[in-house]
Amino acid sequence: MVSQTFYRSLTLVPVAMILLGRVHFGGGVAVTVPLLVFLTGQLALFFISVMVGADDAPELAASAPVPLEMRDRAALFAAAYAALLLMALPLLGVLWRAAALIPVLLACMAGVGASNLLLGQRLPIPLVRARFGKAQTGTVLGLVLGVGVSSAWALASWLLATPSLAAFLQAG
Image (tube, rainbow, N blue to C red):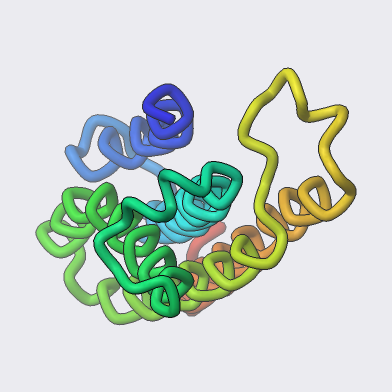
C-alpha cells in the first residue's frame, strides 16, 4: 500500500515544481488544478479499493472500531480522509500562489472524490499487479472507469480554471 501511494503521489512532483516557481507553463499555477483533481480521484479510488478489499479478511473487518452496519460509510470516510490528507499541502500551495483558483479546485476535488469513492465501492480496482490479468471484469472496469472519471473532472477543472482557452494558448 505504501509503494502504491508513493507511486500515485509522484504526480505531485511537477505540481510542486510549478507551485515553487521552478517551472513555468503558459497557464501558470492554473495548470496544477487538473493535476491535483486527477490525483485526488485516483487516490480516492485506490483507498476505497483497499477498504473494500479488506472484506476478504473478515477478522480485519471485525476488528474495525465501528458497528457492522456503519462499515461501508466508515470506509468511505476513511478513504476520503486519507486522500484529502495527502492533498492538504498542495492545496495550501495553490492557496499561497493563486487563491482565486481554490473554489474551482475544491469543487472539482470534491466531485472527483465522491464519484470515485462511490465507483470504487462498487467496482474496486485490482491492487495486486501480479493478479491484474486474472482480475474479475468488474475490477478492470472499475480501473478504466476510475481513470475516465478522474480525467473528466480534471478536464472540467482545467476549463473552469482557465476561462479563456485562447489566452492560455497565447501565454505559452
